[in-house]
Length: 315
Image (cartoon, rainbow, N blue to C red; front, side, top):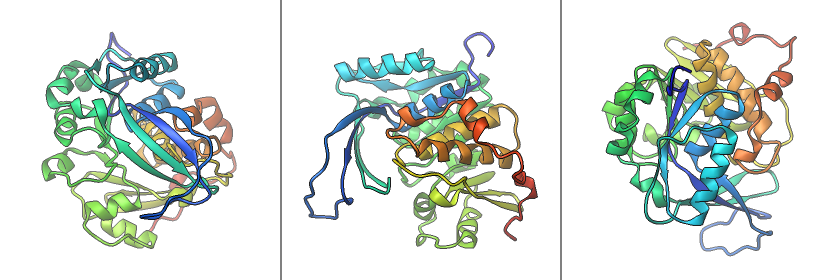
């Protein structure tokens, strides 16, 4: 890191997460009983920044918290993780909040109230121009206004990675500026206005519709699919017992950005991210479950084939 310029800048949300364990995820109109509620630090931007900090990467978070006590607590926790908060604004009102329901298999259903995240506008992002222009990787999501994400992409001189979650319509101007798009299967389908893809071939076909340089689709327990030019790689995850999948996608994005900042090729970076995300689902909570670099490296199987040795999916 040179001066105050980090390796990675994360532009995104900060939330307080209320986690409730349930026997099954609620259906429309259904009332169910849940376990005791637990509060965790969350927000896709904050989660991804913590994932990067746990991996030892220098990272600055561009975003906003509110004027309530929860905001102060969240900021203290982020600083304790090693996230640089020089570009984290404080605005009047509550911090963003999310209610997370988790079933016995670890699957979740989430409702988000934006709170202070709605104040992350282009002018706030532009204050971080020096950091954005100097970063090796800029990572953003969609729990903040889209025009702020476009401002971040416009200022980026390194690699711009976008996690389009939650999925909303995106202007072509933004998609064309994305170097690596990281949707899950459902977000990919929404971006392409298509049915949910059922097979790897269908996922690859949809990914090729998007005007991004490369697309990495997270597939949950099936790993990830890297679609980069004429090549497609399906990366399988290690076998783990899932406790809570909350934050797994954020862990993947943070680890991917870390590996790209290190200079790894995209497939190698995605392989590293798959392993990190698999470790994250073995513990509850979002930020609390993010693994360290030592834990991810320890989980690597030395006799396993390298990503470039895997059989790709024909185009």
